[in-house]
Image (tube, rainbow, N blue to C red):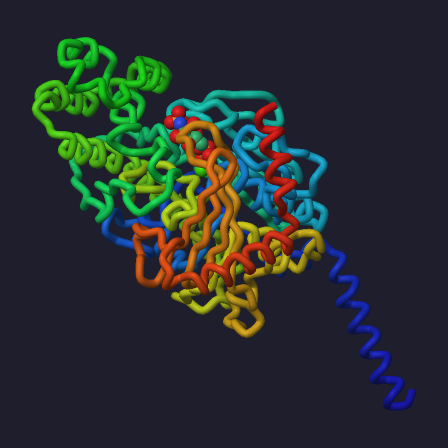
Length: 540
Ligand code: SGN
Ligand code: CA
């Protein structure tokens, strides 16, 4: 055999070895595992890696320290099910059809877990999907029906429905860890979707956090007493003001009995939204007697304070009290999410899985924690438009990387597929974030994002709007029962307090942005006809 023949023989032998190895399941181990973690309504202001004024979240921060933190990550439509539809399909809502929480989702569409399953990944989903259907493309799942409950939650499973005693955040974690211990196929890479219900309204932390956080006091946001001057009709008519729209029972934990005792004080109580007995009771009736014993002392002290002091408070003081109650419960929920994330990260460490597992932490959207006097989300304004995004990928992403580019939940599906080496369908509308994660910024060309919110008229009454957001500006069109434009200068007006649409100094930029907005609508195939089509469907 001549030398060149021998070289060719060795080459063929080696390549055959590699190819045949590739068919063995064991070879898949080199493909990264993916742990996709999403909480519901988790504001970036409540993650200490973003902002440490309200709460410490050491475990989420651990991911940020070891991986990348996106400071300009946003959604395409700040509401639960539409955001999840965008994440799963990699398409805007006007394309995937899930424009609001109540519209149906066409389940013949491809969602990214199906592509992972087809590519040989073991797939699982535990927690809140909020999607109306059972998940597709997951080998194992246990999901909450709809919004689910905090205490003693029900679950939909492959083998029928079940109720589990305890607090939802702990339970979803227990189920996830149980899957890792008992069901994980060590010969396959995995895609695990670990999806929290917390910190969604109505905020019921576990009893320990409820007690701990009820004693805390939090700094007030600068714009808590916003009067919506210099904004349009939409901000003025939205029903998500902490003073006016948070409900005493449902949100602040005032018992129906307390309200009945205070009937003479009605003028002091009633101007703002009692909301009836149900709000408190629908959650409380789920507690067993042991749980009631744990929750009751805290609820009692809240109620005693309320009965003794409410009458004498000014509206400003009432606002502050409601804000503190809101933050105590909301942040108590977050603290559990963080503790439980710690349990999962520890498990990955203990099992030697950390190195080959990509961990993503995000929320389905951002949330108002008193900014502009609000709770809830929906608006294109910063606190609800932006959403946390942290990605850890050992040996690939530089520790402590900060990424400032504008990325969206639209990009997640393609990013995950790209990371796993699975083909990205050409009709997905996002972009893989892998170049940004690996530091190849020159490959990233996006300089504007598109946003479209639909759910109106509905709870919280946030008007329909779409807009373009660039690093410097935000141009928004509110439509349907108004025809109003707003323009914000993102550099000079960080809190978005002043609509400069009619300011002559911005007339040139306004014209330019309007053209860019039209181009973006064309690029993503959104149109006036589609706006009208979805309005018609909604009203039917
Ligand atoms: C519930 C909440 C609302 C919230 C929507 C949508 N009320 O209706 O405050 O805006 O869900 O939230 S509550 O009765 O649950 O407190 S979403 O995250 O599912 O879009
Ligand atoms: Ca949500």
